[in-house]
Length: 521
Image: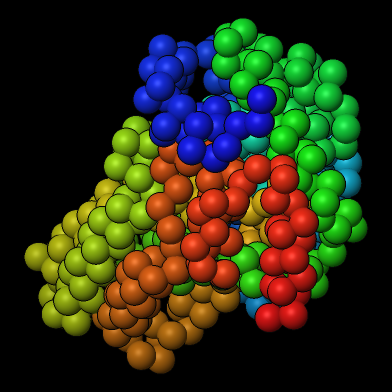
């Protein structure tokens, strides 16, 4: 039996016909365990994002040359000191960009499991190099290695989770990886606080990051490869073994039929996959525009400005105590993690697009509050006056709105909008856009704030968030509860018009024709 798209396993039509086959977030402990194991990559991502801000304070004490050279301040952010410290070179972000760009190819060629293992080895090696660094130059090389591992992990985890997940809970499971990212950021603040009085402070802060990588490496040895990747590589027997642990026998048969039909369609397409193909096919261009645009707007609406610079922003608001700044930053990180939990529920109940839009509207309001608070702030508020507290409120509201929506939505959408053959490559390219945007924001925020004023800087971010609203409305489709085949159909219809009568393997010749048209568009 060939299953057409309207009744493909996991589609809304299929689940309406067989409601007893619908799965819940906690309905399968095997998939949940796989998700948490893969999500440790997100934990590494988040931990490394946050830990360096505290570690740099002590690195400067150990290496006098770092104090004297802004070039050697290889960190993500300016830390909460009275003087402005803005990085010139950020090796971890450079490594993450390279890792994300290469990670897509590694995923498609070697598989999701081996890509994760590779990321763990590189990250753990980087952590060891950083902890043992005898001078800042060796520390820089360790930062580069850690960045490479984070970059590969940032591509791999969402795709691996998405391909193993039932479509009806795919959004929540992929968002669990984002929860691990925000949880890692929160953990980094706790670790920073825990090691402040321990000899070798910064070495412990950075070295501890290798522990989760080792744990994930061991756990991944017992995890399966992605069933969809196995099907793509014609390793059907292994794929069926994985699927059998996810679905009951009745749905399993339908899933296998559907994947077999999809594989036949893939065989009709060009087997060799390259980066330039993404821009030659009209449907792929549209998908990549939506995915990369979401990743860029996630950064340009200021999330890592808030996370990286939250201690500095708190001090800008008039709270000059390092301890208070750290405490308030810890609260911000905790709210970010809690908000992601809310997003896990709503992303499969309200939809990706609605969640992103509601999140962006709240972000705009929060950024306007921040802008007004800094415009109105006077010298008298240096001890924490009305507008200082208003700035802290704006930060809290920003996280409350951002975390459930624009936090998980870009990663979730990018894990599901690309065809199987291009999922790794496109996911890697899109993640690279995220890291490049991250670097741009991290390196320019304090410079812009100094030149234009902090209030104007947040007003600019609010304007960017407004542009993001327009972008989501125009370019991002709703993918809630859709199978991968249904999502592909959306892009074909947007690229070439209504082709609703297509979808069976008998249409493969017509499909090839459309792909050729796309290559010429």
